[in-house]
Length: 608
Image (tube, rainbow, N blue to C red; front, side, top):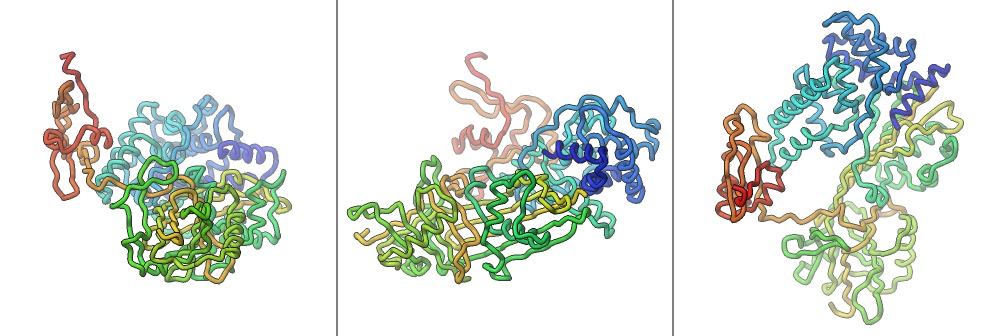
């Protein structure tokens, strides 16, 4: 989508629409500056060469079947090396070099770390790489170019480029470890992914941040989000939070329209946002923030954020260690909290029954009920158990109607029970269907990017919600009365201000993908220090000689090197030993080595 849109704008410029190039300039300027600076080591010269790069691209139409991104980086590399006169003078771009058929770009992969603080650590670590690795990793792992495209831009062989990136990732892993990424599970996972995949990050945000940090200038740099969704499609379809509605309403206000209409017909999401009744007036002013800035093409970058930290009046009981319960048709045990016969009656004041419709007069249980959970902050959390498949508006209307018609007790009594799973959502939603859409009667205003971050958790203590929506537009120009409130199958979560009718958050939970799973608290942890540790420190274990560390009735098991002392098992009680010793004492099985990806060789005794 990005590739095609860039080409379209470039062709529009060549066909006389001069304003189309302003978009490409704002998108690539900071990225090209950063790339050139890594070659010439002079920021002012990098600025000049960036302008020369854009002038060349504007005056010399690219040829062949390559992407605009590939073309502009190739020109930028040539301008940089012309300046420093390395290897040979490159006064002109080799036309044949440019028109080579380029490979298809590698497919995007999920971000390796979803937490913002982890992403910041990785960006800082990349900046500390040796110069010979930095641009290779930048082009492939941040800009998303293929190895072949990067090798041609850098003037390296394909194999040399792959070697540079591999060694750069190894150096990056050491930097991360020294920066504190030494938790056993996490560091092993990070290093494996660093060596196996690319890092999908926003190139313009990275480049602009690094240049700004290095030179502390006051340039007008717009950091546009270009992330891919990191939440699965099913969860996206089952989730709503009001931050995007706030950003959309702000956009309508800025462009002076009651409704935003898209050329060639509105999408359903556009109609839904136009029709949304949710507004900032439904929120406490301390809980939300809306910021607007103008982009380089005089468009708008709108950030709308919402933060809620809610605490129940009393902490519920945690059932995770005492019971093994599943959710719906899920196969895994999930964590639950709530109230049972052994719970303190103080917890009952957390709950108000909205309605409880029994399956029949002779049945105690119900598949159709809703409760309100009260918080110290005054916000209400509404849980609705249902098998219906409706919109959130329809769900909420059903709750209101059923609550009005319910004549039973609304108190949660000592005979009632409650069971709620721990819920956790953490990731990004990228609304790619809005990318590049042109707004009607707006003098060429297009929607460049729409992204929403959502972090939500529900546990025995309360409920936390943190969300930010960013929208960027650019111009081109037990008793019979007992109630068993077990949220162990499909249910809906709403959050709203106490004195307002409409909610600001909704989530449908119909599978266990976003539920926190129970961990086997007795399972030991394993770490292979020859993989994630300092190479020089563990060099003695990496001499390539096979070492037999275990055997059973039918097989012998060998490490591909003498790293037996470096593969450690850590137990919950603080005890640790080598994996070899733990296997011989039958305190672990080989499945633990498989789980952590420890490489070993299995040899059948029958073939020896």
